[in-house]
Image (cartoon, rainbow, N blue to C red; front, side):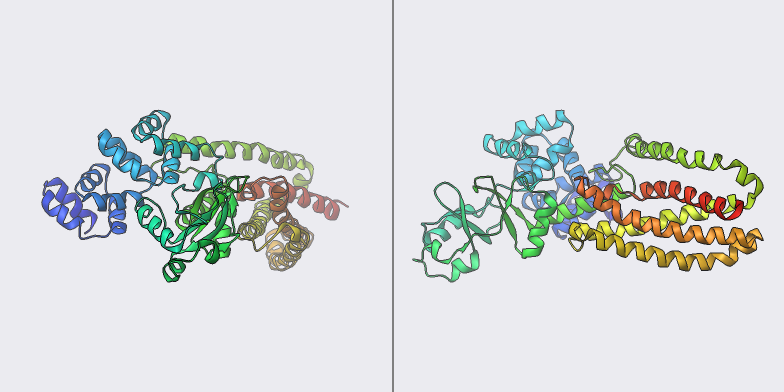
Length: 444
């Protein structure tokens, strides 16, 4: 079923045919279809879905679409879908909606679900406590395998995952984990303490969500338990949460590297004036910094008056510096994010980037030497341009390679070393170096 057929059936009010076509699709395809549809058509299509299928589709929609549906529903229907969400997804949605809407949605929840949601909202943003779910299978270490399986059967309907269970003592301190396969294969009278995996890898409620994602990836586990400072199990972070975390972190880093204040809402969900407000701050700051470059150029009025052709190469030089520096910063930031590069190797990484910049400068300097001579008809000017390219390329890679480590040292996200920021810094250094070499070689 395509979007055109959906619109046609809605416009002709052929809801019986529309429902029959919709239920032929799986939940993933339905979610994509609703994403492409306009709000009215999407709402009508969603209303026609059977309850179980509608729940599956609702979970797959982004927060903006979920909010639109919840606002359009009656209180009873909104309660059904909102309460069916996992607590961590519910908390994430509430964080993005206006306060008035959040209060209305919270009132719809039962006391227990409201408390679970508010507990998650109480943790700091971007931590394990905020993204974890309190819905997990907990087992007492004194249980037998038979008793454990009976408990899993009772709890499995309302829990997010049943493939791994968590064994605790009477103070809810985590002792170990056990997977469903081991329980099924074990003797029914065996004690859990005999077959569990003791001392599993855990994270704390305050652990950064990027670190949580790295733990799940490195240890190849379906879920990582989250404990408080007293080692009491309070929740788990599952692999599907990690997918969301990685997407969120990647989006945030891309926005920051482009000097854009990221938004959790979709592209089309953001209002134009909101987008302008987020972008204009960085751009205004960059303009202020760029006035330094203008002041340096204005201060070389005498030199430029004598050798006008020098001005023709300024865009080339500062553009190259920004591009080379951004390349180095991108590589280092990506390495820090994946764990391939660690802060303790900062000196060797920066040295390596500096060497790369020097070689790049040599190559670019040789390539530009002849062109600069043809354009300026002055071998001295060509030498100045080539020598400046060599220096700018080296400084740019050293700057782009070192700034992410400096930001990390001061506990600032290295992604803030944005491409526009690097470009602006290299504009200043490039112009200073260019006129220094020009004064040195041409005036003397």
